[in-house]
Image 1 (cartoon, rainbow, N blue to C red):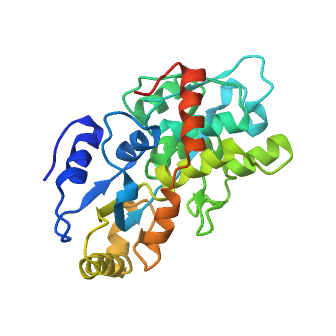
Image 2 (cartoon, rainbow, N blue to C red):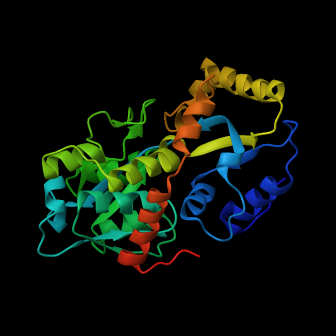
Amino acid sequence: MNEAGGEGILGTNRFARSAKTDGTEILVGTASTVVPWVLGRSAVKYSFEDLKPVVVNGTGGVIYARAEAGVAGVQDLINRDTPLEFGGISATGLDITTLVAFDLLEADVTSTFGFEGRGPVNLALQRGEIDLDYQTTSTYGSAVEGIAKEGKAVVLMSFGQLDEAGEVVRDPNFPDVPTVAEAYETLHGAKPSGEKYEAYKTLLGLTYTYQKGLWVPQETPEKAYQLLRESSEKLGTDPAFQEKAAKVLGGYPLVADSGVAERVREAYTVSSSVRSYVTGLLADKYNIHVE
């Protein structure tokens, strides 16, 4: 069953309210349903704490800049005479992770929102209308790689990935690109820590490392849950599937091992301090008050 509208909120509300708990009904979760939950939007009547993940799949991405804006590396994000302009779609969507990254780095950045997609943002950057953009792994090759080779754009950092210990590590798809955490160390001479970094790590897990998932109600019988999980694990390790899925999934595996529920539960545990910081950032810097 698919219930259109509400950026997935309506359908997820319905699932939380009335899904069968016998393993025959499964929720598809994405960033469009996770971010509103993190922000505590009043329209959200579900909680991922009441659900159990069967399988998750992630993505990654890079933040890059227009070279003609006077950016040669991450050092050019701070102590600027004129702020760089970031092009966004919505501050309360996937863009939020990038906004928190900029705040963590103390970058001199202002933002323009309302673009219809990351494709239009990329074109605006090439036209010189904005200076900063991010693209996910699946579109990096077509949107960024070419203009970077031409010297028109500079890849600054990747978002990174969370490892099993919950620490930020380099994205396997961008092994030579420093992470946001490494960029912070370059800029400030110390490893990141504190409230902003905890918020960044939380959002990294929710919107990138474990962005997409299949979920069932917590009350689902263990036998039914394990059948779904083991089937997903078998699919994810099948060579024929891996070959066909390489481009579609962007090189990120299906994760459905026996420890997936615990790791995802930890990643989806959002502290009150993280929620308060994120909503405060939106209100104070972007005049966006979450309702």
